[in-house]
Length: 46
Length: 317
Picture 1 (tube, one colour):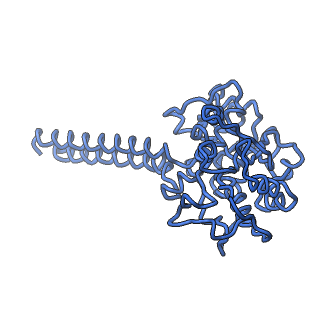
Picture 2 (picture 1 turned 90 degrees about the vertical axis):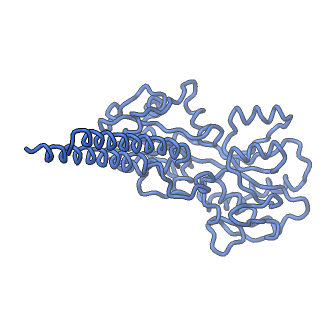
Picture 3 (picture 1 turned 180 degrees about the vertical axis):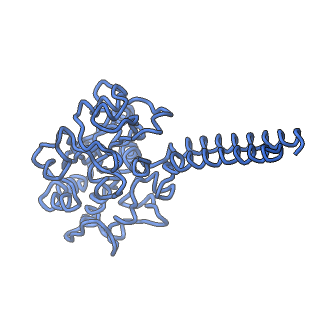
């Protein structure tokens, strides 16, 4: 693969990955406002 | 290694990292926030369709007898007490006065449901006439005062205020001081109170809800600490009323802890050994001239009225 194409691919993956991570953070913070306390505690990972 | 192979490894490695990281993030954090209930139920906090009066399949206590007629007081209240006041409406009112359509009570129904915050606002605004709740918050009392309404609180029974952790949390009992320590942020790790080496993550409810008001009273001068991002990765502790946890929201993932070594059982509420007991109230407007308000109240405090309360699962006077 040409160097330019490789680095473009890497940057694209980084960008998509960061966007998905931020989207998950935002979704979690929105859902957390309405979550049932009992559901939240019951689903805790231990 | 050939250059192309290294490049492929780098791309696959980066994609795998994000898949693993975001997958772990979703499973450990986001997924916890998705309710088992529909959005409506998460707001209402109880599946009222399972506790309707006059329904063939209902979880209320059904007693029959003479009905109240004339100007009927409109009944409302807290989620945890819905089965109680629904049972009273079944006993005292005609079926035609309760109007439940499409998952909600209509505005002219003798029984409505707005949960604690809505119920306290409604009784001050004249939308309801008798509500069943825990004690009001200072904001709710101030609202009543601003509107020139004096609320009358009549105790009808007792309930344990309980603390909840995940069933796999190794802690089974805390002292009152330890609970205040956790919720104020003074105690940060579970191993400080005999648990695992995990961050304590105290939760809170909406301002004005019955359990939040009771928790703030329990805390006294100490404030409940704000949520932190790191705490999200820790082990949570929440609070509620015993009947709500045992009766309405049975979940195998949650357990109630003992306080000062005493478990929150009905017997321990009755004998007074469980240390955090709240009164539950019938709330009316002082000076309400509707004679049926007094009739309804007298019934609730009568022997049969108290039987209903006990059969639902609470502890009577």
